[in-house]
Length: 303
Image (cartoon, rainbow, N blue to C red; front, side, top):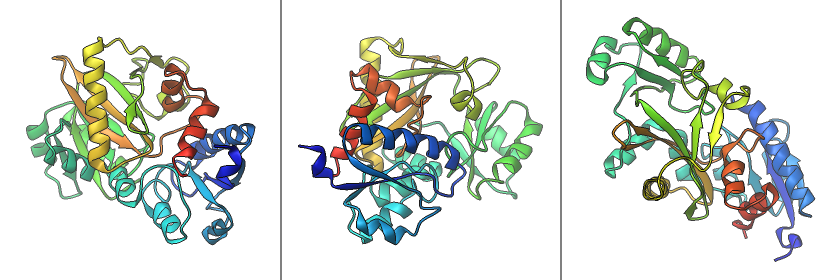
């Protein structure tokens, strides 16, 4: 394979979602790496160009985070235009973007994910606390980058947390809090890369937007500290969770380990971040892949 085999490549980033600013950073990193590798890659921001213009390209590398790019709509447009693209297809992208329905699917498959409740303005919030206990995590079902999320530790904070999340989405869930260690598992092709443990500073309370993108005191541990058997068990669980959603190519599964050693699936990301703080490049480095090798690997999946 030579880089000419890729033809003219559109790197899709930016877009109109709440994660636009992160996508701009991710996309620029991917674009630069592809160009350095000799690929004829060009920037394509759907917020600034007509998507029909993409017909002049041979394939697309999707680095659009959030709705409008990660949720199946862009994948559907590219399918109609017969443009090969990176990552998951229409169904897996739409499903993976929706945390509620991802959890329904995982539960239906017998996979472990924390108990949850869907919230609306008519919800009996006291009953939710009775059913799930405290603390709780309240989150928009169809946002990423921890946007709109709040940890609820006392009963009177649940309704305001719902109102806060509802600014970002009409579908809101409250999820049973898992006390323990947080991990992320990057999937490349059909394999899980070395697991990363996420350890935000205690001032954050959880791995929130600031801990992800701004903080300098968040720790990323790889090796992750699990023994070999537990790491392999978590990797196998992540690969199965990824496959059950129908995801392919590349992505990320986030999970927790409780104090009894049980693993719990939180969510799937079908177009994860590719910034200098991002976890996919970090796991790839641990597996011996440079950032340039990583993006060429992902693009190769479109051939």
